[in-house]
Length: 290
Length: 252
Image (cartoon, rainbow over the protein chains, first blue to last red):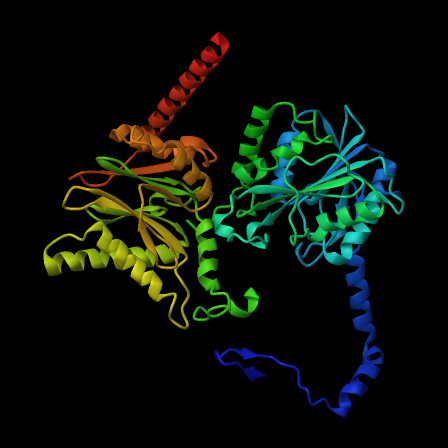
């Protein structure tokens, strides 16, 4: 331990190593008990990403986009993006559920992936019945770093097709946005876009400025698409309200001008009403902030 | 860089930031929106009402509080911090009245609240208050006042302002629509406050609370019915304006 000038106590590594340290490193693997190994195996099994058939616990044999080839794949990640997709995209037409991703990590709580009841699964894939070449994913759970690549493989497959147009919608807190202005003076919420080289259509909003980057699953999807030369665009909404909020969800509207979403949103006033209903039901009563 | 200088309130970062104060301003944004308007003969405070749990007594969830007969305040941010600040301000109002036999001026009590907040940005072992406040009232000279304070302890006079979630959107609306005509009479000032809130409030008039102070009169809280009437009038005026616009464009 060490004390700083300001009276904080910080932990610092001891620079005077002892001989015992080397011996400890060599013996670490051997000191693992069978129980430790079993716990690690069980943990690895729990963290597996599985794609399940609709309303059952049976796994899909083939990657999703190989089972359901499509020309447009929309991925909505986070509460606001999911609400936007539900209200503006899924409000018109009839959508059927074609699968769900069962995954567990420390952010999901105590339930194992296999134990999730169908109604509680939070990464669900839909297909437009009237236009089966459109697939949509609503992902409101956190996909951990080690689970992102398995998720991508299970959805896209090991050799994804290049004729699918991928659109990703997600939110980020405005304090993560790096700019010369202070976060308080930025006109939140605002939309920025990042696209792969294969995507030639200009996005419906300004591009994401350097040095800002995408994070987590949206970044993984975009990187995967960039490597496999799949046209993809990420619409990133910076907001100061990460929970479901009307203004933030509506900030995604410029994305409706893109090729894959154009024509899907038919009735905008009805979509707004649908969004208001979603926001009202989602509101969690809390007394901490007024 | 922020992570090395944001744990202790009394530490500046090399580029001059007090991160705890800035983080406190983020806490303000978690509160629902409040708007204040200074009219010619009236001051108006409008707030977005939070949803109340079924079993909770609605009267105990208030964003607009009386500080004295002629001064009231709306806040956004941490509820418990607001309670402490309001109690201290109320005591100060009475103490001032007993000591100098005059009610506080709006500026005095605003300065008191701002000084209190500033002290908490400069003391070790404490954290800043996570609230911003809009303080309105009339002084003895009959002039309406509107002040805003924030967690850093600054305060400024405003003609109209908003705090809390989506405050920037509301402020932009006010900048476009706060004109001499808009505050020409009391009812126009009240409508301006409600219109500003309707830009961001998700479920319309039933989620709005409104309070006004007129010269030489105590605070008046609007009932849900009165607010609904105002909202209906605003919607009618909007429809008529749109009809006029479409007639004009059709004739041209």
